[in-house]
Image (cartoon, rainbow over all chains, first blue to last red; front, side, top):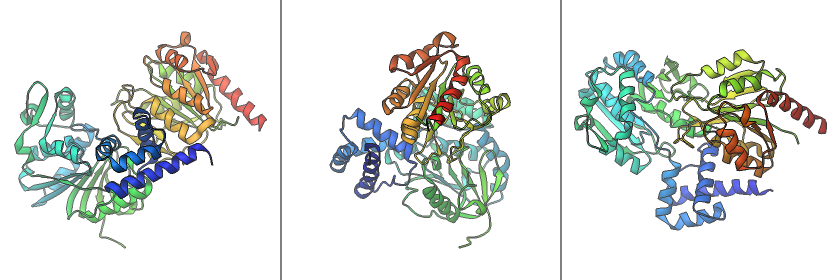
Length: 278
Length: 193
């Protein structure tokens, strides 16, 4: 066995150690990205091997927290993929308006930019008062930032452009206050959002949802974990519930392909079919 | 040496350079060719379509979890990093920019090394930054093969120059000669076997 295969064994052991010690389960994440991050951390922190790094993170919680920040990717933006929000407005909102009360689950919401995007869209469509949004993530720090609703002002120009392209009906500046460095989202947007801790790799079903958003999270998972999550979403959606995933993700290659029909194919908006069949 | 995959990184001026290389390859070219071309994040998948129309090989945007197949040219989608898993399938991520780029050449090259080790050919073409220079260094450390476009023939010479400065590359070639040279290299390696 050569050194590279030994390194792969060390990586598996590291992920197992993280799971056993801290409960975060990266064992079924797509490996290439994880490996790249671990190897970069290895060089940066001057460890001689992954095993040496494993020893450190088993005993040093703060070191683990730094590694965790590096391993859980928290890159997002307001109205990411504006076309998706345009499609949501055009094809999904009219259906949502038929329900007296709505439950929306935003799984893997990261620092919350897209949760606020959804809250703005619902407000403009007159749906906020009868909607409950559950925004969840496994990363506590990201979730805390999402809850605060305070973002870096450097991306405001892009967010404003995205909002307009996404079919925004008002002026984006109606929804925030700004100082030199920050954009502070309007408190009223938070009224119907419940932020909570949930890990898609290890936690269970979330109530009867009318819509689940989970965009650019599944790409980090291997096939097995993707199937687990699609099952979780299937079981968490009410009949005819909507599922919205990232533009490069698809339910079509999963075990749950037959359980969803396309609503807007290119924007990866699906609708749950029938009842559970197992 | 039996090569199993080719990875290419390019930025400014890349479309023309890629067209030149790919047009020189016949439809029975056996290796997969995986390309990162820096693009505007909101540009669509036109690059694959344009190149597909210009060459005999099939050119497509790489899909998440798709298996890498020989004789196909894959392009990284705009605004995602393209990675190769050790089972030789693609992964996409939206982690932060690397070398100010997403997709980044570095990310593709590094993960291609995990998957193909010394059976990898890395090529750096025209570009106005240094993305990929650490990647070619790692390809050489692993025992793979590196070709760089001759800076004088590049629309932007920073990327080729950075690659040449980072490691001892195997070949520096004018853009027109890279395609024919690849054919020669692959045919030679077949005979050796």
